[in-house]
Structure formats: C-alpha cells, structure tokens
Image (cartoon, rainbow, N blue to C red; front, top):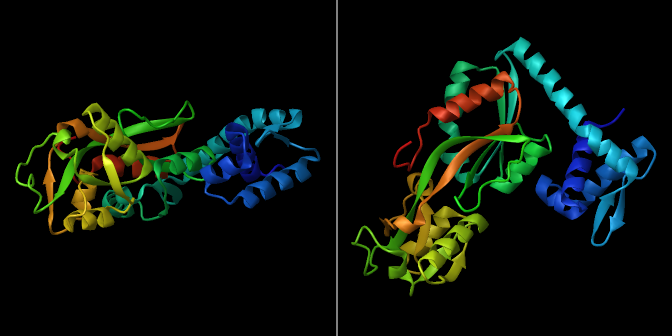
Length: 301
C-alpha cells in the first residue's frame, strides 16, 4: 500500500527540485528525505527520481505518481473531514504551525477559549517561521498556520492554500532612551541614517532595507537576531536603533527603550492560512477564536 506520508515528501521534492530544499522546507534532515524516497521507490518497485545537475528530477514513474498524489490526498482529506464532522467538536485535532511571537501573544487566548468551547479538541503547536509553516501545510504536516507578511513580499499561498487576514501589525522605531531624538515621538527614517541598526529575521531585515532604500539610504546593520528581547536589550544599552512590530512591543518592553513612529515603516499583515476546501470542525473552531482577538499592538482592526 502506498505510504501517503512518503508521497507528500516526494511531492515536495518534485516542487523544489532537490532533496536538500525539500528537507529544509519540511524541517527534515536531508538523509531523512532520501530515506523516505528510497522506501517509496521500494514500495512501487521502480526509481522515482534521478540526479539532474545539482538537484533531482522525476522519472516518468515519479511524474505519474505525483500527478495522482494530489487526488489521493484530496480524497483522504475529504474522508477525514467527513469523519470529523460526524464527531463534531467532541473530539478532533489541530496541528498548528505558528511564528514564535504569535505563539506567545496571539495563540494562548484563542486556545483558552477553544478549550472552554470544545475541551475534546487536541491542539499541537509547532513554532515555525512563515516559509516553514506554509511548507508544513503543503506537505500535510500541519492543519493551520499563523504567518506574517509585508506588503512588498506577500506569502506564496498558491491555489492550494487559503489566507484569512487577521489584522495589520504596525511597525515602530525603537531607540535608546538617551538617544538625541528619543523625545520626538515621530521621526523620518532618514533621521537615523547615521545610526547603527539591529535587524530581525530575514523577512524583517528585507522590510527594513526596502523602507530605508525608499528613504534614500542603506542602514548600517551592526547586529542581527530574530529574538525580539535580544533586539530590545541591544537598543536599551545604546548599541543600535531598530524597527519592531507592535506585537513584539506588546509582548515585551525593555526598560531604556523608547518607541517612535516612522510612517515609512508601514505595517505587516498577520494572517491564518489553511488548506483550500472544506475545513474540519476543529480547524474551523480555532480559526474563529483566532479571528476574535485580542490583537496586541494593533492600532485598529
């Protein structure tokens, strides 16, 4: 019998063109992906991938299998959804992949309300940055993701995933309390062109570089960390300035850090993402609770 878990791995290898890229997207090791493909080839009795340049490509058998995997997975999801509907919310499971700040600031309230409403629903949480969370959804390893995206780099949801916007998270400047401009309240990015900066994750760094380029300068990145507490600690000691989302400020505010507004920084969009099509009752219930809020750090809905 065809192993659907391994078939999902093959689908990701086909989509990305290499074992290494598929392993990274699925949060697997490369040997684990190779093992899954080898076992799948043993099950079907023929090679499914061959080396091609620095990656791999599907054999004819591999193409046939991947073409049919989508239909098989869709039918499997439909069966699971029907069974879940019969059970209602008496029992169910949601595998959530959520970026770390949202896991701390958004998810707990939603989970607490869900437990009161449907105590039989089990929720498992995986912390994952948006690209990894979406890969887990595509691979069938997660049922729901909470992601963020900036206006100039929207998430790649394609046709197989559906994005449900939750709210807009404003981006603020963070300055040391003794910075000469700390009392201004509202600044232009260009006012800080000569300062050292600390940048966040890859997407946050990209947004900062984009906004600063629009403002006519390239920031001097002195530090880089995706830990918002570490970012604020560096700022509080007078070592750098930075840009932080409202959600991060709502979760933690370090002494010695002053917040200022810079309209050029705009906002990032927080959204839930689920597979397209009918939703199991447990997934739909968690979505409803997430959409209820509260939304820490938001100016408005």
